[in-house]
Image 1 (spheres, rainbow, N blue to C red):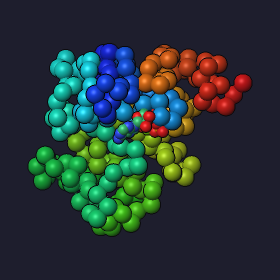
Image 2: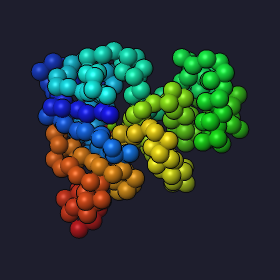
Image 3: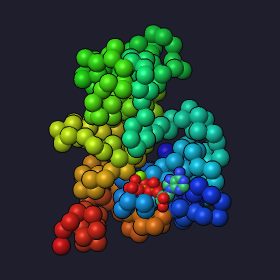
Image 4: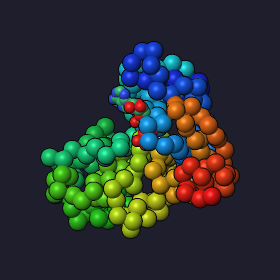
Length: 235
Ligand SMILES: Nc1ncnc2c1ncn2[C@@H]1O[C@H](COP(=O)(O)OP(=O)(O)OP(=O)(O)O)[C@@H](O)[C@H]1O
Ligand SMILES: [Mg+2]
């Protein structure tokens, strides 16, 4: 269970990019962070993963404070992020990328997990020995998610997963998210297609200039005229 309280952070001390961010993932399978370009969404995600030079406030995970821990310690507790623009090892094969995601597992266990991810992402099976850099954008995104899932994370943080992908691939990805959540991985999602992000999530916050402007159930926010006007091109 991840909760963020009065979280504040940025790239330089004294110049916070976000402030007073509180968010509780509770029992929500999928939680969305919505905001326009430059609002601070990616920076918040980096902060949660321990990747910001400075921050204040608290991030708790399973009753333990994780803010201040090194990124690999946060990852080891089960919080994994797939970054904007993906982040696979382009010179390594698909299989090698997956194995890296499960590097802490025994060989037998790792093999089982690779098989599970190949069932989830059949396209990757056909590409198993190709280098990641040779994959299409959508395949790379699938690989990045599959690699993160190799560790069976409790929380999967996704920054703009649909970026640059063909609509049919986006459909496949968004069909997958509730399934991952049902299998026990909560998702914290930043999605440029706000309507889609809200449809797949149960709870959401809307960020403006680094602060929470609105918070509520995703269904309510989808109906909120302020959200419709700012993000959905309605009204
Ligand atoms: N590495 C960095 N160093 C300094 N400032 C940064 C850095 N990355 C982002 N920023 C600044 O932080 C602010 C928030 O950026 P951030 O990337 O978090 O926005 P975002 O909401 O994710 O936007 P987008 O929707 O475009 O991805 C912006 O003003 C940006 O210029
Ligand atoms: Mg961003």
